[in-house]
Length: 293
Ligand code: OGA
Ligand code: MN
Image 1 (cartoon, rainbow, N blue to C red):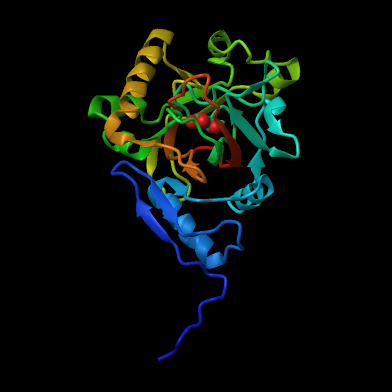
Image 2: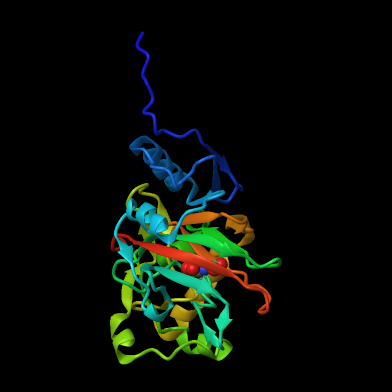
């Protein structure tokens, strides 16, 4: 018999499922302390299994959030660079707060179901949100399991989507969002040039777990390639309704110290919103993923 000594910096933490649809909370881990390769491997497996990890009680700086995020892959910067955290520009400020009438961050991130940066050739692998200020009421984030959504597609709908591709565009809802949020800045010609549309499979295969997932969303998907407009629109509407049904959804109610990390290849997400007079502020980092296949 050999007694294997655990490396001194291995941490004792629990990973507890949060709902039948998806999600797990990570309790007892301190991301401000060094993270061993073994602990990272455990988190990696849990992320693939549960799709959303909620790290409780994290008191980390933006620089520490960036450093932890970078362990998962290269970071992507959001096209609305005016909402980057000045001292840490890989961090996007997600907030409804206005100072002297000016928004300090993106106040309406996620009012439509979406997968972050699906309009890019290389959409996001996953995103982190770290709670900074939470409203006393509302402000939940919903996540919908797109592996389950694919598995439970009615046969007729499945036959219509297999082998199809769809276009995604950052500009699709931009005007609609500006109408509901007049503070939303006009895009400069440079910003528009930075977000050309991208085409991806409607059903993608997760590059790590190899599981199929639906990959279309109300926020960014404009059309199914090769279908007449009316048919494309009707098919997309059916997919949006199907993919966000309650049985696929975990609703996250934020607690102080929460750092949430979701898999943009497996889930769609939506901001439920909160009363405008209540302050909400979170810091987002976004990891680049593969070109969907
Ligand atoms: C995002 C996002 C949802 C929320 O930051 O990518 O969609 O609840 N946020 O703030
Ligand atoms: Mn988002």
